[in-house]
Amino acid sequence: MDHDVQRFTVAHLRRRPAAVERGGFVLGFDPDTTSPFVNYATPLPGAAPGPADVAALIAAFRERDLVPRLEFAPDAAPRAAAALTAAGFTAEAEHTYLVCTADTLAPPVAGPAVTAPESDADYLHLDGALAEAFGGAFPPSPQGAARLRRTAQGGGAVRLVRAADGTVAGGALCSAPAAGTAELAGVGTRPAHRGRGIAAAVTAELARTMLHERGTGSVWLEYGGQDSRRVYERVGFRPTGTRRYARLDG
Image 1 (spheres, helix red, strand yellow):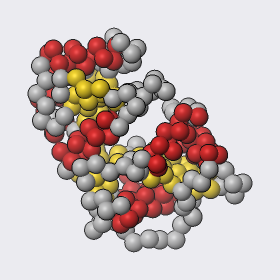
Image 2 (cartoon, rainbow, N blue to C red):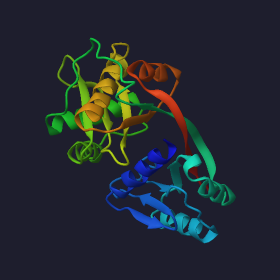
Image 3 (cartoon, rainbow, N blue to C red):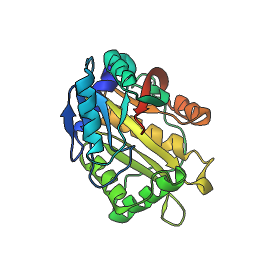
Image 4 (spheres, one colour):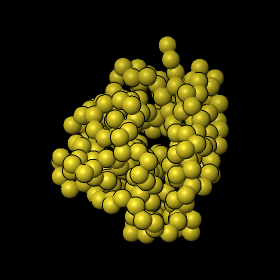
C-alpha cells in the first residue's frame, strides 16, 4: 500500500496549478497561498536522487520564498529519504495512515445529514468551519473556498453537515483518485458542534462515495490524535503504513 499511497501523492501534486519536477521529485506549488501544507514536494516511488537533485529541489522552494518541505511514504522511496536526511532535512512529523476498503467500510448508522456544497456560500462557510476546527492553522479565504470547489469539480468529493442556522457545522474532502486510491482529508468540526457524530458521518459518506460510486479501490487518511483514530476505525479504516513530513529550516 505504501507504493499506492506514494503514487497517489505524486499524481495529486502534479494537479497543482504550478507543479514542477526536479531530479526525481514532484513539487506541487499553488501561487494563491504560501501555506506549507499546500506547497510541498514528494519523491517518485523508488527515486534515488543525488546531492545535485536535492540541491535543485531546495532551490525551487527558495526561489519562491517557501520552506522546502516534503510529504511521502519513506518505505516507498528509501533512497530519497536517506538523501534528504543527508542534506539536512529533519522529520517534522511521522504519521500512521489508515486505509478503508469496500470490505472494511462499516454499515451506515444513524447520524447527522451529510450533503454536498450547493453554492459559493456553502464553500465559504465550509472553509471557515474547517479553519475554526483546526484552530486557525488554515485561515479562511476565498482562495481556500475555491480550492474546495476545485476538489469537487476535479473528480474528488466534498461533504458537509449544516448547523441549525444554515451555516456549516463541519465537513471534509476527498481528493480525486489516482493509483487506485484517494486521500480523505480536512475532517473538521466547529468546537460548538463537537460530540454529535459529524466527523464520523462525513468520513463514512466520503468513503462510501469513493468506494461504491467512484469505484476507488481504497481510501486513506491520516489522523491527528487517538480520539480521531477511534472515530475513523469505527467507520472502517485500518492502520496500514507510515508517512513522513520533512522540512529544511535555515
